[in-house]
Length: 284
Picture 1 (cartoon, rainbow, N blue to C red):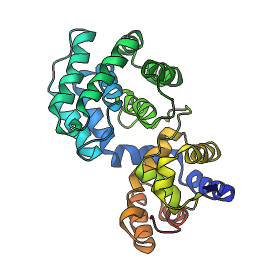
Picture 2 (cartoon, helix red, strand yellow):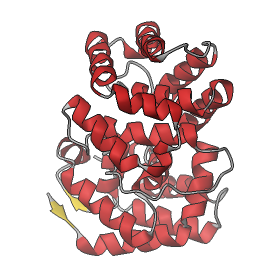
Picture 3 (cartoon, rainbow, N blue to C red):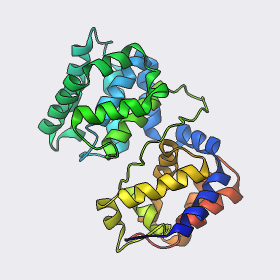
């Protein structure tokens, strides 16, 4: 694989022009995960919702349903739960959710073991978050390091960085256009690996190569984040919203679809610039 340095600048310019506040509006209007988690926060409070969101994110892999459906399942389950009486009951509720939602059927026992491991090794941290949910906003890098240590995992692994984003969704107020100014490695999933390929950011045999060896893509999007002024946690939202398009449509049709979505948030010219930069070749 080879990184195309000139593409970093071109993509960064398009994203910077589109703007961080447009992306924040995009999150609230198009990310179903935000809506699902906000429903729980409004029902039981930011503290419990942030802990639930963080923990469930850590087992949000190899799902037997779409991610949107998984978080809808999360929303319905925890919105109907009473507020836990203590820490142990909170952990029990997470394990009960894993056992009840069919999305977690693949590797369910391993997912439960993962929750038990982090709940034991990061107990003090999680209790602190329950008492001070704004720690997610104020000390996200520290939280990520401690969760990584508790799981003996690398910080850039998708589920670790994803957990910080979902906890942020729980703490953030609806209609609060306030970016989270932190550096969290972008989780390279199928959608983002595909758009990394179709934007010609990385030369590779296929998007699958980028997906299986994500470090170069993480570095490239880190550079784009810095140059565009859009934190990775919010850049992820833009890429997630339109990342399915190159996998399902040709270049011309795909560009039109991107513009149709983004022009509801920003002006058409800026939306076209994003479409042109992200869809240069087909995803394969």
